[in-house]
Length: 394
Image (cartoon, rainbow, N blue to C red; front, side, top):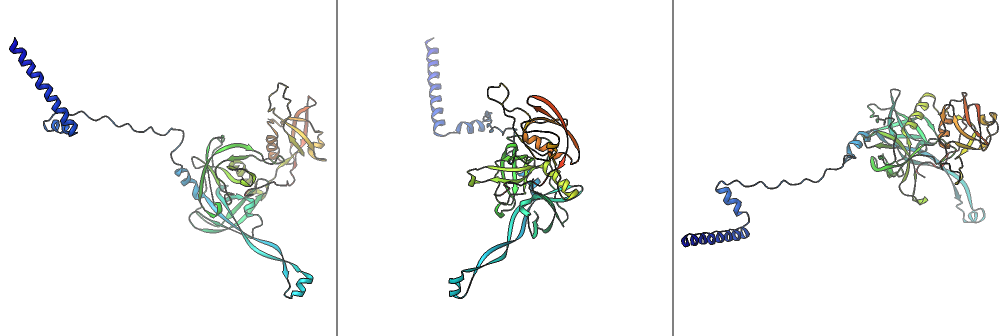
């Protein structure tokens, strides 16, 4: 029995000594154990799988290069040459005459070039270039630089000062017309990209989001701007505002710069508005809008009335003498709630409905006068020219 116990103690000491030696060898020569096991054909355990970083969320792509590649060939640079007349004083050569008579007023002419952008669109089976009216206004000649380096002379088809849009026709073939976004409405927060020719840096792409929709900067006009924080600079006017799929959603037109204490506030004309203007200009050379002959404001709601702060409808603030509204008996302070079969949401909504009416047509307007409902029929007139406010690149 004592002999067996002695053998076990000897074996235990031997095993402990072997483990100690193996630990020291592993510590001094890392990997030696794996090499010995491999040499003697003993299988080794596989190393743990490496964990890959989490993939990007499915909400947006890692790159917008495909969207830019789809839209960029349709964006052109516009160079409008204008003859500007200036005034100066011509000084006499004789010092005595200069002292007695001073300078003689004179005029001179100089050539001034305006930079801008444009977008190739297809309408009624033909290709046109949409741009801003202020880019080409009063231009003696207009040159268009295409994406592939070709230069073409452009002719003006027509322009609309109120929306600041102009339609050009160029004599060139194989023009890559841009794809138009569908009727899915834009939402604040949607990613958009602006492509244009800012400061002569052609094919510049900037990214931002839709900051707001339905912006109206002039209360007397049926404006419906897209507000964006995508960088828009001098020369971007008339360029493309596209979505993350490369589809046209707007025409860049206006910026509020640092001179006004603003940064990241730009505006674009919605593509559906631009295409309606385009169709009318192609058909008639100009845009015709309906007019009721009144000014509107938001419906005032007292803070303690219990009614929602943004009550629907529009309040009449002024009626032009001899206008359709005056002839139909509409009065200041009337609350207009419906035009035709459409509800009126606010003054801007009423302006858009009014502008879409055909001059000479009849429309029924419903509302409240001193709290009592009323209905009246108007004969829509053609809207007279409106004084335009601040436009792009100011």
